[in-house]
Length: 256
Image 1 (cartoon, one colour):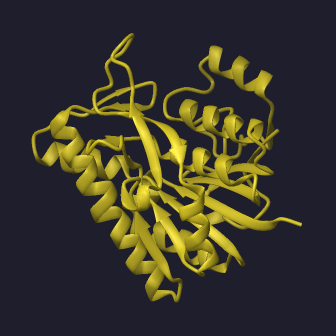
Image 2 (tube, one colour; image 1 turned 60 degrees about the horizontal axis):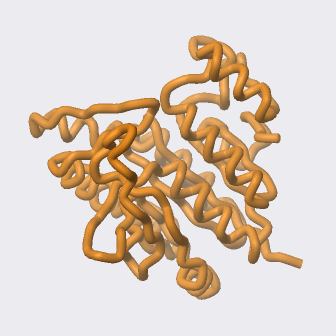
């Protein structure tokens, strides 16, 4: 029988709000057994970039990353957000270790082609070093992964945090019974973004396509759901999208 592994991705407004982040980390600490946390931080990066006079450009929920923006997201994702989360987990008795993709060669990526859209220094995951992650997990450590990867030739690349979570979950599904949970500030996938009670409890792919075409689902929810369905296809046992405060409960949207 496979050991269980819980992979939790946290992003959105949760990362920039101390009270919400603390609730999430408390719930994460209560999860028994093997676990991995993936941290986003896009809104924090946008705010700091603005303070530095650097324009943030998004397309379909994905960040266009030129050289100045790459410096910002590296500082924010791999530094400020990741290390603050690691420190908070250590304070709660969790032996966390913060990693970007270059650390232990955990996540190797390739720069996305410039055509048809030039996203700049954005990486698409090529390979996850499952051996390195399993070594850490088996030692009792809890990896905290940020969405900065590398190409193996010295170049850091910005990679969507939802994609990081999906790729790691999919790669480890052979060795573990994996549950992947995407946590953010909303209660799940909503039929009406302005109505927090309009949660879609179960979402099938054909319904997702229909909602996307009618703009019911748009923006940053698109890459999140693309990754959620990719994880299911790759053998991940369960995928849930939910509010950070509801981690560990049955609420939210389960991907079918």
